[in-house]
Length: 85
Image (cartoon, rainbow, N blue to C red; front, side):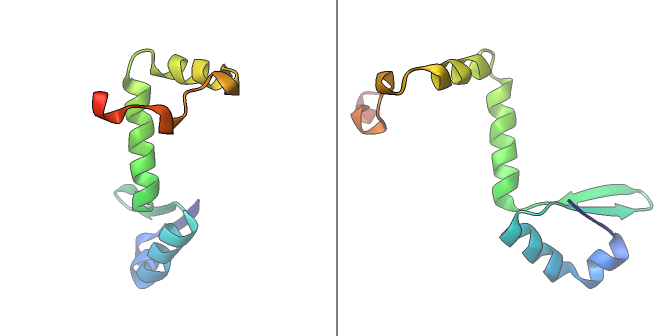
């Protein structure tokens, strides 16, 4: 995580945005009213998806159970009849 203040962020905004997008760096910008965080859209969407999955009762357990299944027992994505779902 990179820490900076609002003045420095404003002066170097394009470099900070590039750092967040290209290198998945989280930028913490401090101001007199509090802090703000800048991150890539990709990281933000991944975080939101993770939070959503964690909010579904039993989902974490289901993922962990699937992770522990023997590999040969797993269903291949190509075997799923998506039209039937």
